[in-house]
Length: 112
Length: 114
Image (cartoon, rainbow over all chains, first blue to last red; front, side, top):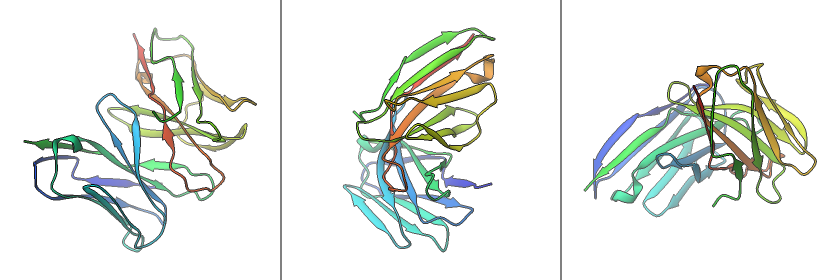
């Protein structure tokens, strides 16, 4: 059974600081997605990573994928309050069926 | 707005009852996915349909069933409801067929069992 683990589960950080969220998964896959969820809201797609070494950036967020290490990272640069949310990684391990197994989520709180 | 429409937004019912959740995918998307989100289980994949046919199953209980209709909308039926079925149920859609496009999520249906 595929396991997807994120750490930390909770992250409280000051505005202007940098931090990284880690996503480890237990089986071979080269397709990984990052989503954001605001409290009580839906999930919003952030990044799609489709190969080893893939790197995507949008604003203050940058995601990368190392398929050999089975690791993806979401790096936050100079955090701002608007980035407060829960971030999920999701691994697509059943090629062609696009079944996603989600990580536990990282609840990020940016403190002014 | 993701373009995925779910109804109803909230549903309150009692144990033993049956409910139907409805999802309309984004225009042009052929795949529909159902997920359950709860505090103890996290976000769990339930089932996927692609162009009217069941494509993949996850941790879906036998009391739950789903279908996708010719117009591509989908329904998730939950029967013999138990307290533990209280959760947020999301529908997502994508182009499917190995397109590697992200799934787009609806706003969810919050189901409360009393």
